[in-house]
Image 1 (cartoon, one colour):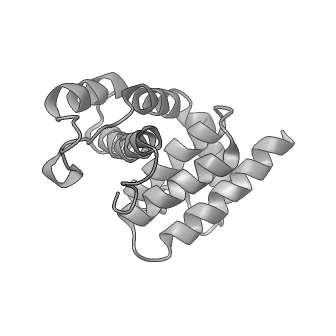
Image 2 (tube, helix red, strand yellow):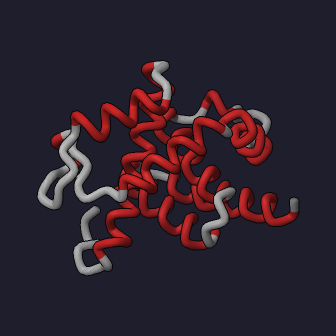
Length: 156
């Protein structure tokens, strides 16, 4: 992600892992493949190196542990997370109507919100990821949905 070069390399590797997790969840949904198959493809057939680039199909410096954790939790708890996500969407806008990349992003973010990581860190990270994928109103939507999810999870 441009502009992050001066940040802590560990923080950047976690952001890159989150971008890759969104891509992996999108691939799981679109291809019907399970998380293990997609993750195996990501780690065996994509270059994970400092000078690699997403636009070349690679994953530059991703935190593989975080990537695997997010994808596993998001797929394992997808039904429960989708119920939460659906409850936060307007009735006229069901989950299936969301852009598939946006749906994957929200699934990854909600899985992380449930993980016990600081909610503001998770929300900020996925806002950055949303800005990488979308140039319209979607990042604002992500912020609103994730903040509502944070409040709902804190209340339960």
